Length: 215
Image (cartoon, rainbow, N blue to C red; front, side, top):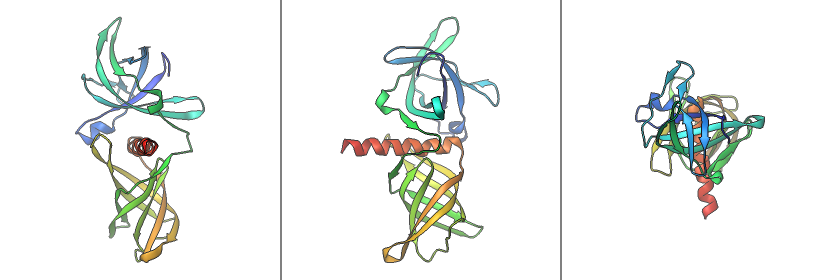
């Protein structure tokens, strides 16, 4: 990460639609603890995002080979130079999640998952693992699921800061594996997921990985 790099960020908000919006900014200056960025703009609308001190940010930037680098930050304040700049906290390099375009970290996790298939069949399940490319979950063996079925899913995510969010996606079943006790393990890959929803899952997976390292 260096001066003139482009940052893509989302601002935490109680308004679900607002929290999904992605803004683009550019690094104007940087030191060991802070990053000064241009006021973010939403490319689709051309509108600037009014930031406030204390705003919590989910940020990523792209490096060579299409690698996405994710980190969490917050707005520390503002400065007026030639133009107004926002000052955000610089992340510890060890806290940056690096994700290859086609390779996603997967971690074991028991999260509640609401699943819908077709118009009538809906059920709750619990994940076995989650990652930026898909999830697997356990459910009753009598539920008629097969490879290539498409599911609509809502994942309930508990973050380290006690925030709770939902991530919605469509997934395709790639494997069904019978388990003991009349259960089945369903493995799915994402086929339709918004970038903001995927980032929530990647962020959660990274937090889990950090927890595992501390044990």
